[in-house]
Amino acid sequence: MDISHQARPFLLDRRQLLAFGTAAAAGAAASVVLGNPAPAAAASVPLPMASWNFAESAAPYASGIAGAPALKQGWRSTAVRISTPFGGGVQFNGMNDYLVVPAAFVGRLNVGATTNAVTVAAWVYSSDTNNALIAGCWQESRADPRRSYALFNDLPMYGGDDMVCMEVSKGGGATPGYPFSIDYAAEPRKITRGIWQFHVGTYDGAKAVAYLDGRTTPYPSYTDSHGATYARNPYLYPDGLNAAATDFMVGAVKRDGSLINRHKGAIARLRVWNSALTGAQVGALYAAEKAALG
Image 1 (cartoon, one colour):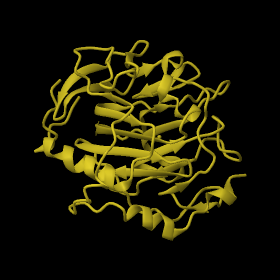
Image 2 (image 1 turned 180 degrees about the vertical axis):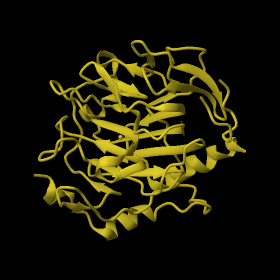
Image 3 (image 1 turned 135 degrees about the vertical axis):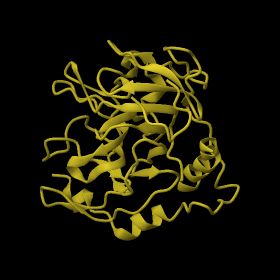
C-alpha cells in the first residue's frame, strides 16, 4: 500500500526522585524553536548507531550503518514494506505485526550495558487510537521483565494520553509502588492520527525527554492516581538503563506469549543513537526531513 501522501488515510517508593522543577523542564524545552535555524555547530547531528530505511522488498531489513543488526519479521507477523514520503517504510496491522532483533543478536542496541544514553527517532503514521510501541528494548514478561528503553505513543494511564512518550527502566520491572512502569517523559502536545509526524525520545543518564515534530514542550506538573506530583517532560530518572539483553522490538511489545502496545499504522526512517541528541539536533533533523512531506 502506498501512503506516500500524508493526507491519504489507510486501512504506551520513587516519589522523592520524581519531583523535577518547572524551571528545568522549561529550560530543556526552550532549546529548540521551530522556524529559527540553530547555529551550525549545534545543528551538527552525529551518525546513528543503527538506521533502517526499509529499502528491501521484505524483511529482514538491513541497517544502513555497518555492524548494526537487521530487523526480522516477527512470529506470525505479516508487516509489509510500503512506499512513504521518506522512501521505504513498514505497515503494521495493529494485531500480530512486529519486527524484531532477537536478544541474542541485539549487540550495540543494548545501551544499558554501554553508554546508558540513547535516542530513538522515527517518522510515524498512526491510524487508530490505541497506545503503541514504536521501537525499543522492552519486554514486559511477568516472569522475566526486561524493560530498558522504548519510544511509545499514547500511554494514557499516567499522563501520556495521545502523546509521544520515552520510557526508561533500570530494574526491568514495574516502578516500585506501582502496578506498571510509570517512568517516562511525555510531550504534552497531542499526536495527530492520519498524518506523518516525527517522534523522538532521548535519555542522557539523568532525564528522559520526548519530542514531537522537532521540539519539546514543558510538562512541568502531573499528579498521578497515587497522589505523587512530578514533571512529565523532561522526566527525571538518574538510575540508568537495564543492562540485561532483550529483544529490540518495533511495532509491539511481548508480554508472556502475547503482544501488547500494537501499532496500527506505519513507521519510516527508524534510527537509534547511543547518546542523547540535543534539542537543537532534533530540531535540525526535523527541519531537514519535513520537506519530504511537500
